[in-house]
Each structure stands twice: as C-alpha cells, then as structure tokens.
Image (tube, rainbow, N blue to C red; front, side, top):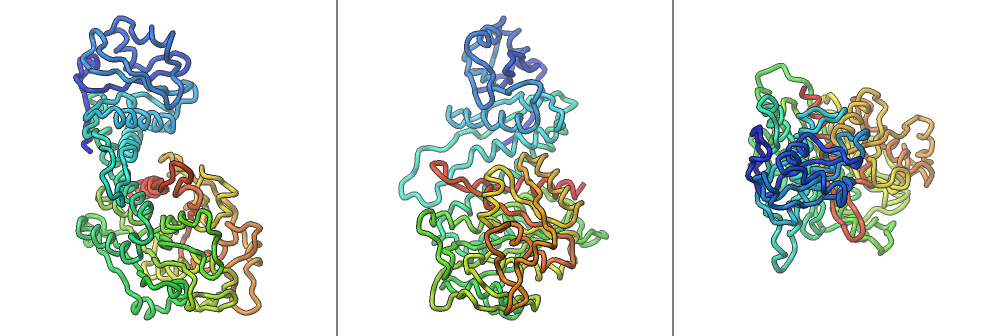
Length: 499
C-alpha cells in the first residue's frame, strides 16, 4: 500500500477514481464538500436535501459531476457535527476504504483527515487514516484450497492537505502504515488454525522478523533451555502436548542504542497458548475452535514489535512470548498438582484451564533480567473480563497510576480503548492454598481481578500493567476473526514513550 499527500489547492481539479468528502448529519458540509458543491453548481446540496443524511458509516457515490475531475465523489457520513471526534474520523476513513475495496478502485484521495476535531491533530488523524485503511484491506487467505474472489485492488491513497500540512501528514501516514502492518500480522497469526500456528511456527515468525528488520535480534529457547531456566510453571502446561514449547525473546535496539545513554527497555510479555482445550479441566465442545485465538497476546507482541521495527522507534523494546499448547493427556497437569515457578514460588493447580497465568508468571520473572522501565503483559486471560467489559474495552490492571494512565491515554488516542479495573490487595486472599504458596484460581467472583492478582505476585521488582484482551482480541459469529487489538494501543504508548 502506498500512501502520499495531495497538495493541489483546487480539489475539483484532482483526477482520481474516488474522492472522499465528509458530510454531517445536520446537512453541514466539510470544507472539501463545500468546494466540490460550488464547482458542481450545487449538486451536493441538492443531494443532501433528498437522499443523503450523513449518518456514520454510510456513503453515497456521485459520478461524473460537472466541473469535477474525479470520476467519483464519495460522500461519507460523519455523524453529528457537535460530537465529531477522532473516533468518528477513524470510522469515516474505514468506511471510505471499505467502499474502495468493494468498488475495485486502485487509487483514491481522501479529504477526511483535513476536517478538524478537538481530540486529535493532523498527524494523529493521518496516522489513524493509514492504520484503518491498511486494516480494512486485510483478507485472510492462509488455508483456502481454491483461490478466493479477488481481494481489494486499492494500492494508492493520498490525503488532501495544504503544503504547510504535508510534513505532518506524511509522518502520521508512515506511523499509521506501520501500525496497520503490525495489526495485520497479529490478525493473520490469530486466524491461522492451531495445526499450522504452533509454538514452533510463532518462533519461526519471530525469526523472519529478525531477518527483515536488522534492529530486531531474536532468540527462540527450546525445551532444554527452558528447563535450564527452571520455568516449572510454564513447562507444566506444555507437557500435556506433543508440540514442543518455545520461549521467544525479541530485542529491539533503537537507532544509536549501542552508543547513547539509553533508557531501560519497555518489555512486552505475550501469552502464547496456540490451542487451549483446557487440559484435564476440559472446556465444553461448543466454541472450542475459537481457542486457537488463545495466542493473541503472543501475536500482539509480534505485531507490535513489527510496527516498532518498521518505524525505527527511538525506544528500546523487548518482547517475550511463552508459547505452548494446553491439552489433556496422561502427562498433563491434574487438579491438585503443585508446581514450582521460576521465581521459586509454588502453585497449587486447582483448575488446569487457568493455564495462561501459569505460563505468564515465568515469563514475568524472566523479564526482571532486563531491569525494565515497565513491563506490560498481554493475554486472552479470562472469560470474566468479557462478562465485565464486553467486547469494547480491554481490561487494564496496574498498581502504577502513571503507567496505567499512559496506557489509557494511548488507547483513547488510538481508538483502541481500555478500562482500568481494581487490583487491591484485599483480593489476594482468594488465592490462598493449604498446600502451596498460592492457588492458580480464586473462584468465580472477581475472576479477572484475582487472575491479575496472581500475576502481580511475580512483578514486584518493576512497574507493571496487565492487559486482559479476552473480549477484544477477536470477534465471534459470522464475522469471526482476530481484530489486531491491542497493537494500536501499545504502538501509541511506545510512540509517546519515544517522544
């Protein structure tokens, strides 16, 4: 996908297959729409009176308007003018991209980023435009035997801006394209079936990223090396499967990082359960196919590191992925088993389906060696978080107010929102065990919170936040598939960290 800026002052003279202009529900036209309306002697205003109401996520196509060089003018609904914000702009860009994909156009121009909104500057709007367009053009074709219908043909998109705005817009487009590419890698990994996307496959994907981006150094630890690290909790989950586990380490060094006095890295930790049958605590059969998505935390780490490397971000970042399957077998964990984590703390396994925290805790202990500025783990951890927040907000847990607020703000900026849930010590009592330092579950009540409390016991040496993405990493139903969240949230957080 090629992004650019279009600085021609006269919009009606731009030759393109499709030119997007915005219209509000109250009939008010964006400045670009006003220009096209004047050039076409009121053609837009006439349509607004009779046909197009400007509702969000709607379009109306006007072809061969007199006085206008563009083959199509695509009116894009923006919603109410008084409530127009960054999220509405991103939705409008997505609507236009989806139209272009369906119409089969190869190049287009959007004026939507030029519309002011109170919570995002031009660079942020350009970033959102590129992110949403790249994401909107994604098509999964990894496991079809016959070629599907031809995918979107859109290859070039230009934003119409003034010459004075071009540099800001180009910077935003570059950032947004990298984030969109990261999202699509995350989605592709999530959508692949578990017999393809195994722990070894995740390791190979990391190695490919390391070959593509020289600033990324990748190491994939096999079972013997994991055993040498004494990751007993992680290994206890892995031993139920014939697929070998993998512990993946990605180290991104910012440009000039070896010579300058750099800050400690931000460490991202991803849950990589490439299939979760629940182990001996077997899940119900209905919907179990969706448990291939239980590695979306790991996929998020890979997607975010890809975006970071493509951007050449001025911030050191480390990615850690604990990858394995959770299956029932004669070697699998049993309820009542006690395992020893890398930290030396012992865990009574009351429910083998609460395995994500068992692999994450050892990865969080491993993160200590980097003396990190912050550690953020990302996991499809609990159904309880879906019950609490649905599919709109990612669950955010942290005892560090500054880190939590930075992540919340990044989510707002990225239109990839999170909601902070409590993490008081009073919840810790639910994890009490008569036979080990802690149990791996604390009952149904506050399940997402007690899961986060479990992880908190392994993070006392650094600032830490936990993102429970069980409700936001994928969609169910007829549009089933991975969403790519929370790559935008994390990318915006790291962009802010890099200044």
